[in-house]
Image: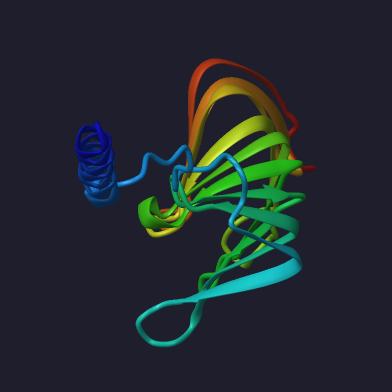
Length: 185
């Protein structure tokens, strides 16, 4: 009987050891994923300057707060201020919030968006007000599909959708354009 009990204990130990070694080589299951809805870093009261190939400022981006998310490599900005630099024509953009996708060179401005171009020797002052604007930081093209109000010293126009090309110095009003034009005396 002793032999039978001893044999049963050894068989139990052998089966237990085999089972333990099998589970030891399996990879543990983890509930943690690398794509997280939480920011991987943040900044407050910052400024970023992007330079062109000649080392001159191409645009300056400032905000009161930025949250960066690594899962889709986007940055959410509070109170963004964007200044697009050109030799003769600078444009500034403000909004309540924005989403910046650096790989796509795109900034999406949301809520109370204001575009301002100061008067130059060849162009009058221009202000545009809307609630959404998509800005391509490389081509310097900004566009919206929402309602916008365009204001110059001589005119005030309302439109649904517009495209602003800062390189060409043009504004294309897309539809339902209404406005008032006052001729200078």
